[in-house]
Image 1 (cartoon, helix red, strand yellow):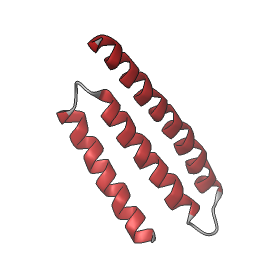
Image 2 (tube, helix red, strand yellow):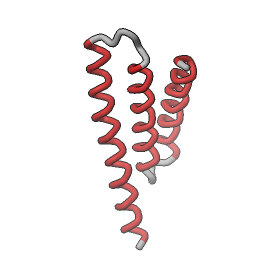
Image 3 (cartoon, one colour):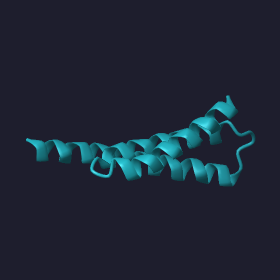
Length: 85
């Protein structure tokens, strides 16, 4: 399971990098890709035993950043829908 999550983190990071170049006009795709990557990092860090202080810091920071990225994604979708209407 740990190997799968590590590969999923790498794949999500590659997609986020690709989305930065390809989907410049749709920032919500990048926001949600980054939020997914941060969520996967949190899950992978939770699998570490024992979790050290640095692990807890990573969990807290990545959780806050993931929530912020998801919020920015929703905000971007709403803004793009208002521009289309």
